[in-house]
Amino acid sequence: MTADRRRTLEIGGRVVFVLVVLRVFPDVFWSDVHYWWHKMNHLGLHSLPYRDFVWEFPPLTVLPMAPATFLKDAVSVFTVIFATLMALAEYASLELLRARWPERARSLSRYWYAVVFPLSTVAYFRFDYVPALFAVLALLAIERGRSPATAVALGFATKLWPVVIGVVLVIERRYREVAISMAAVAAIVIGWYAFSPSGFHDFLRFRRGDGFQVESSVGAVALLAGARPTVDFGSWVVGLGTWRWVDPVTSGAWLVLAERRRLRRGGASTTPGRSSVVSCSRSCFRPGSSRLSSSRGVSPSWPWHGRATSASPVWPSVQPWSSAS
Image (cartoon, rainbow, N blue to C red):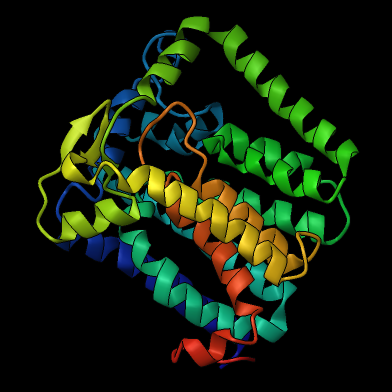
């Protein structure tokens, strides 16, 4: 199969996947897009996010919502457009990884379609694949000895968490790039606050809450098992109940796993080591929230898991559906 034909099939398959989810799956999977559309379809000089209404995401997320202003009576069309944009961001991440490490393309692809793609039933209807794309671009910049500052800043302006890539730079003692990246992040925060101090504080308050988000690994399993979701601070969550201990225990386990992988792969200054550190650091990053990391956490981490794991000589033997290229 030629590369062009493969790309056509993969992109077309994603569009079909989006339509199937909208048609077959319950609205808890995709209704957030409708909620955001209602907020954004009156966007204008007298109706600005943060200033005139609460917008619960960082500033760059306004851009994918721009079509809502032209589709005031077509929420279904907007939902398809939005999900398709997220699908393209997800596919671009996969293509970038396969292009950079072609010798691992088959292993990456099999891992991706077995682990990452199923999460798209939810993640295509969230913003999470965009910061994941910026994070992949940052990884590639680090790999090539370039500064990841632009990618880190854009990722932060989308969903905050790509700032954890600074952990890799600190471990590698690339302090100048750390300073540039953090300066860019600080500039975004200052501009954001200057635009609307009250809106910035509303954003921080909105991030508070309790329970497992339905995008999280625990929440998704509970949802599919029949747990009843509720809305908490604007997010669909499954109540913690007697499972409250899972959050801190999981976070601690991720930290242990990060160090273990870093040591096994010769430190952080290797591609698998960097991937492991970012993946595990990201999974512990929950600014202003007690919620377990979700596809605001978990699903964007899978590209890092995929890259770290596909480089392991053990991977093909322990995963029957993955083989070395």
